[in-house]
Picture 1 (cartoon, rainbow, N blue to C red):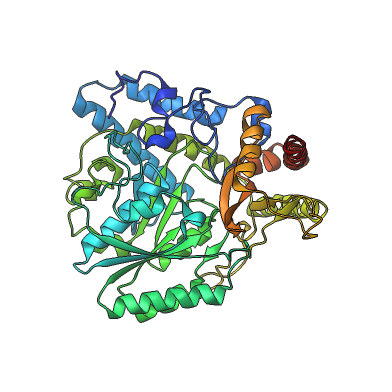
Picture 2 (cartoon, helix red, strand yellow):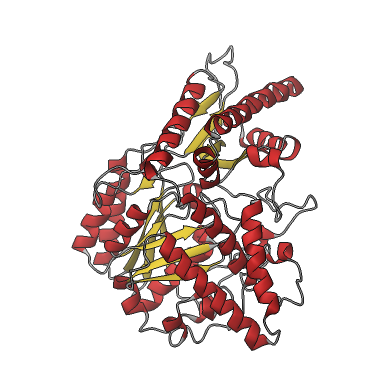
Length: 507
């Protein structure tokens, strides 16, 4: 783990303290095409990639710079550097609770981690160490959550570099980790359509009951919202299972952070862990994760020492102070400046978003939705993947802005062929080529292609255009709603132009 003397610039620290996905390529961007410095005005206007990752904004970079300056002023011996990090991160913890409407909730703790993938590792190891029984994790398939998540859940290194800077072998077993098995549930059919929710729920029920009856401990992951905007399994099913098996642990994978304060509180009131990140909907820089633990979870977990398997992934200060004094004392006292500074940047985006009235947020989302749905209805070369709006009615009343779609996934379609008379979905490689061309040559960001089905034995991928907090703030505060909608439609126009150009080359 680097010290401030080793990495003297803020931009360098913003890509430190995470796995290899943060490493910059020759063009100055990470594997998602995002930079560690603010975008220019043109690229900012056409950035609709918050479902994957975003480049840091100018005002978020300024906020991170203020914290960085305070760190520079502290003494530089190892202890003082760690103490400064711990103090600053605790301020972030309190600010995050306040911005999420949890400032009065003494029964909620927050654990920080470098990414959503790291959060899955932490949650699985907490549950595995809390029970002496073998642990099974039931999750949505990796296409809807993240390609590295299964490895993290099974306590395997998911990159060549850990959050605290250790070089490891990706795929190898993490030392001292408890064995965890996983069961993956498909949310889509091979033709990209959404599976019937009753079938998904039935499969989850069967797996849970079989595991519980065989003496296994179970961690059930409730997806809210997936890569393509789905919520699964249904909340009613999760609640019924929890009523039948009180020992069932539940983690809500809300890493997209497309969640209102009311929804977050409702999940915590149910006793569920909630995993969120500042690098998706909030448009903060990659990576920054936070695991919200309700009293029902942390009161029991505090009684155990944190597993040694987290030694390369988690610093003592990433845990609340009362954990660090006891259960987390075995973790390294290493500062993770990158994690801290990325969260400071993400909170700057969240702070701006929280100033907006819910009615104004909802009005713009609906305006944006109408424009996007109308566009897809008249452009058959782009096939929108329909998803049901997130349904949280089982745990809360009323409709909030987070019950409306902000991720629009679509498959590129070729012209109808003379043989079949039907349009065919693009191959993954061709979709990826268009995604990269827009990113590198046009300065336009979409969510990276995600596998959503199969066609003639080959994977079909969807691109994703999405709204993030930064765009909603600009639309409401700066009266840029029409400009943002026009920019989104321009990106979709450009996708089709590139499809035409690609077809000419193929001929």
